[in-house]
Image 1 (spheres, rainbow over the protein chains, first blue to last red):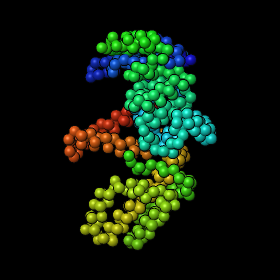
Image 2: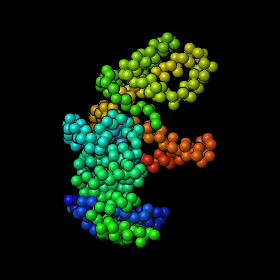
Image 3: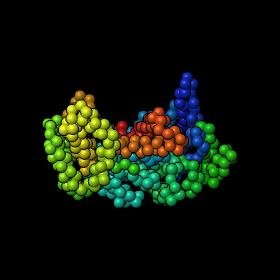
Image 4: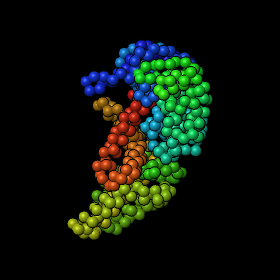
Length: 230
Length: 200
């Protein structure tokens, strides 16, 4: 598994003359296959996972993925770390399903045949094979989230980061996404408010008021989260 | 859900034509529109467009969807032309515009966005020497095509929220949230593009 390291990480946004700290003093090393991240809204968990993909670079400290520093090697890191957002609509770039999955494979030096084969395989894996030429915006919410996943996984990243992938989904589609996550060979770092989604993960991090307040097995993490917020 | 300018997969001669050829034909047709001066010429041009839709096996309902948003504009233009220049001129101007919009829509309906992007990228390659990044311009074109559906959907959501909250038909209550939602979407899309390696 890849190694994700946070070394004395702090992050703050400038807000009208002062600054707002959204992450404070985070140091950890993630080597597990599946890592969950839970916490209340505004606790810093989304900022935390965005740092893994170099979407956010820390104000202080360092984030490394397999030894690559996100502040210096963002491009190399993004080839290793795929990112799935809460709202799949915001990450669909191309008008049709097949074209959107193929989008991530451009500039990779692959032949047209190879791209087509990889797109077909990805669509098949996520139950979208009949939708290749369909307009992406006409898919259901669940299908859009599966498309977003397929578009990330077709590039074969080593790490998949997901920021609340089931928040906008109904029970059936959330279950489908859960099954997909369970079957991934990649290291997964998943932020969620659906606590049952991380119950069989190896490690769960609990964020509260910009700090990492618990780091351990899922059952204890959920208990710690409840104690913090209820 | 809107079917505006969305690719319709079919196995037809129009679909199989190279994207570059279709775009050149569109430019030629746009130029030829200026040469139309008689209603029978406009009728002939619209007949050719109708034949092309038939050849492409695009449903009539989909064809109508492409011009429906322009209904008010074309109606107002026709009324203005009738008053100012007479009915013949109105038929030529409105008919020519209608045919051109239908033709442009036919290109979108029968051509994958990636094929259009490829043509743009290839055409702009010589401009690389003066600092133009053809891949970025191609991406802009793709995002433009995709954004049509996104903004229509956002507008529909805003309209429904407006009605649910009893805001009636206030233009301000429609435009402000639509602009804010569009900007928020653009912000999220920018993050997604970076995450998907667009700056590679």
